[in-house]
Image (cartoon, rainbow, N blue to C red; front, side):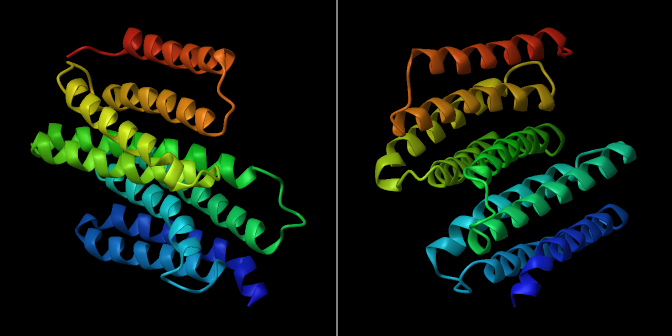
Length: 254
């Protein structure tokens, strides 16, 4: 079983890539691909953890790869350029592979595991996931005329789940983080609604919203870890302001 778990991340990532390609070739297979991807991720994480579907460790380690693959699958449906699509699924498959490899190393090779590697990786992956979800939600509203109220609720739910997981992976119990999880989710969902009125593209809107999320989640995490200070706030503020300025200055206004 140890040998199987060593090669499992590569098998799972390869299968994910193949079914991404199937989705590109036959978009009508979206439901079949979605079910397979869910089973593929769930069974892979199940095998790498303690083999108990209802355990906390299974649920916590499942959340990041599941939400990441879900976000990439949804946004993939809106991409038009073939080259971008291929680069997108290759990059997504590699990131998914890195997640599983680090989960395996964390649980089965503690002597080789580099401290904070998994925590840092999942934090970055979660940030990518929120961006992809936000971009997808703006696409749904722009191209499919999905009701704004529904997309706002979805934004609230996704933000809640990813914020919870990000703080959990930083070893912050929900009993301490729940106020910040709820607060960040409410703020971001309200901002989603406000940004939706801007005459900018879905990509720009997602970058703006993700930048605010980046600031909120990092400041909150530092506070909960008792590491927050003036220097830290200034650092995250400068990064956020620079991203916002560059985004708005180069964005095509509709």
